[in-house]
Length: 264
Image 1 (cartoon, rainbow, N blue to C red):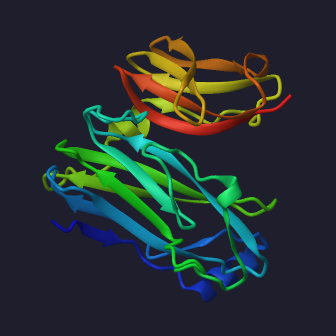
Image 2: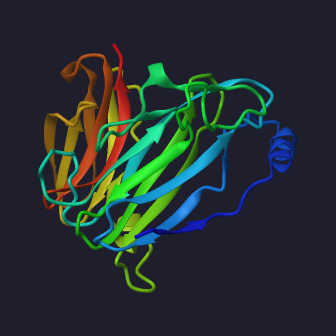
């Protein structure tokens, strides 16, 4: 069964250039017809959202993608393990489809867009635009995934977009829940990269856990979170320099993941 998609409004490339020129700011990538909602059924094999990305600036930009989890169904197979029950997901970027549950594309496979370039079929015939695949696997509900397009060049602002995958949702249910938006989770880790100690504020009315994961999803550290609002600290001395994920776990479910780095 083909999923129903809902597209957001397109920004004209010229309008984007003029807006950033007037503001005197660097311009990030421009998303072309990004999908906001994909509606389907729990029995669908896969639900797909895809869109193009344009470099409407005057300078080349080399882009990679980070995927953040904002809301999930129950059960959700994340971190992904073959054979486990629950919905699961993956994304493709720059002609590469990453493993199920991957949170970031590889820097070594980032795509460089020259001014006025738009993603499409690359020289090798591969689709290098953003493709987001969601597999309901029989689970009804709403999963919200955020994709952030980041440039390796300094001074280029990132651009993020959220997609709702609604499998068997009733009218009015295809939204990010108020609970997911405001009632739990982490705020921004600061400073990031972590050099000494970095603070991570949280809101967890029922408590939970901070998980530190490597990029394969392997758990490196688990810290209990007291119910309410609080702050936990990440110590650079606990980890080798590199890139990791911090995740918010509540009731055995991972409800939020974000990337951070450690440098010493």
